Length: 267
Length: 370
Image 1 (tube, rainbow over the protein chains, first blue to last red):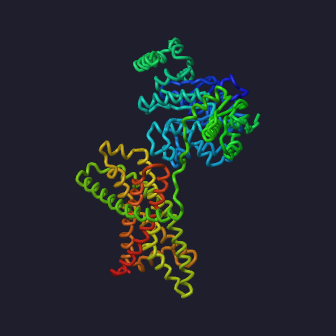
Image 2 (cartoon, each protein chain N blue to C red; image 1 turned 45 degrees about the horizontal axis):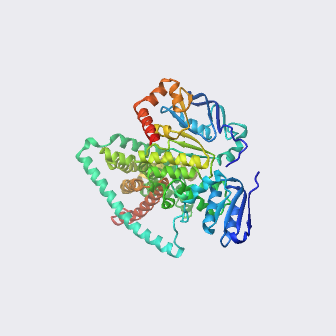
Image 3 (cartoon, chains in turn orange, red; image 1 turned 60 degrees about the vertical axis):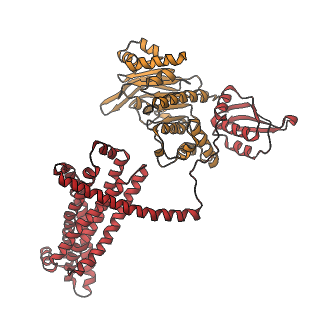
C-alpha cells in the first residue's frame, strides 16, 4: 500500500548503543534490528532498560554512543533536522496513555494532525479524529470525554488512537496491556494485531504479558546484561538455553500462557 | 512522487456516472480532493480506485464516506485498499468531537448562575473544612502522641526560616522608602523629626504584618495549595485515608499551625527590619544618628502598636494557610486544576487579609488603641 523506496529494509536498526546514567551503563553495545511489517515483542527484567531503549529509538533520550536508524533516517547526528519528517511516520503509546488531560479524547487525536497538517479544514480534522477513536473500538460518546472520565483500558485505546492519528508506519507500544483485566488485555491484543494487518504497521512492543507474546508477536527480543541477548520466535528463544529465558518462558506463568495459546489454536 | 490526488467524474450513461480516483489518497494530499468531492451532487454509480497509487486510512475514509453518501459501488481497489475500506465501512463518525457550546447570550447567564451557586458551595466547603480541622485538632488533643511534630518543625522551617532573607530585604527597603518619602513631605512643615513616628508606628501597626502576610501568601500559601493539590491528583491523600491516617491531621494542621505561629515572628521581624531601614535613611539623609533614631522609636511608639501588629499576625497567618490548604484539598481532575486552585488560594488569601485588616483598623481605634 505504502510504496516507499526503503521497502524490504529493516525499519529500526540499532548498532552499538550505549546509554549511561552517571557511571551506570544501562545499555552497553546493544544491537537490534526490527523488520518491516512484524510485531516485535521486547522482554526483560524490570530495570533492564526496555523503556530507555524505546526512548532512545524515538529520540527522547540521546545515547552516549551508537547509531540508531529509524525508517532509513539516522537519528543521531547529521540527519537531526529531518527528525520532524520522521516523527510524523511513527506513533507512540506511552504506558499510562499520556493523554493531554485538558483536552477531550477527540482533541487529543487532533493534536498531531494539527501539528503536521495545519491547513486541514477543522471540520474534516475533527471527523478524522472521530473515526480514529472509533477505529480503536471506543464508543462514539468517548470522543467528547476528558481523559479523567475514562477507565484505564479506555485511556489506552484513546492513546492508541492518538498514536495512529497520522497513519504511522511504525508503532511503539509501552506495556499496552499492563493494568488491564484479562478480557480487556486479550481484546487489546486482538486490536493490535488487526490494526497491524489492516494498516500494514510495524510494531515495537514492550511487554511483560506472556499471553501477548504468545498471541501476537512475530518475534521476541530479550534484553539482559545490557544487551539484546537473543531475538527470535519463542521456540527459538527457548532453544538458546539461556537461564533467564528458560525461567521466563518455562516458569509457571510462561507454561500456562503457552498452554492457553495452544488451546486457542485448537479451537 | 508528490503527485497529489486526482479525480475525474465520467458520465457512464445507463449505469450512472463513474468517479475515477487516482494518485495518492493520503492525509498530506487529501485536502483539495475532499473539498471537491463535497461539491459533487447526485447519485454516482461507482467509484474506481484502479489508478490509486497510495492510500491510507484518511483516503479510505473519504472514499467510504463518498460511497455511502452517493450510494456508489467501489471498484478496482487493490487488496490493501480493500482491507482499509473494510475497516472503515462500519464506522459512522458523524457526531461531534468538541463538547457542545451554547450561544453567547445563553452562556453568560449560565456562567453567572454557576458562579453564584459556586460561591454558595464555596462557603459550605470552607465551613466544612474548618469543621474538619477543629475535629482534627480535637482528636490531636485527645491523642497528643499522634501530633506530627516532625512535619510541624519542617513546615516552620519552610514557612519561617527560609523566608527570613526575602522578608528582611523587602521590609528593609519599605522602611527606607517610607522614611525617605515621609521626610520629604514632613519637611514642608519643618517636622522631619516626626519621620521617626511615621516609620515606627506604621511598620509596627500595619505594614510589617500586612506585607509579610502578602509575602507568605505568595510563598507558602501557594506552595500549600500546589503540594496538597498534587498529592490529591496522585491519590496520595486517598492512600493515607485507607491506611487510617487523617490527611487533615498529618498535612493540614502542621501547615496551619506553622504558618500561624511563624507569621507572628515574621511580622515582628519585618517591622524591625523596616525600622532599621528608616534609621539608615535617618543617619544618611536626615541627620538623625542611627541609635538616636532607635531611642526615639521607644519614646514615640506606644506599646499597643506592637500588640496590634502581634494580634493581627497570627490571624493573617491562619487565613493564608487555611486558603492554601482548602484550595489544595479541593483539587480534582487534572493538572490544570492545580494551577487554578493555587491562583485562587493566593488571591483569596490576600483579599481576605486586606479586608480583615480594614476591620482591625476600625476595631483597634474604637477600643482606644489609636
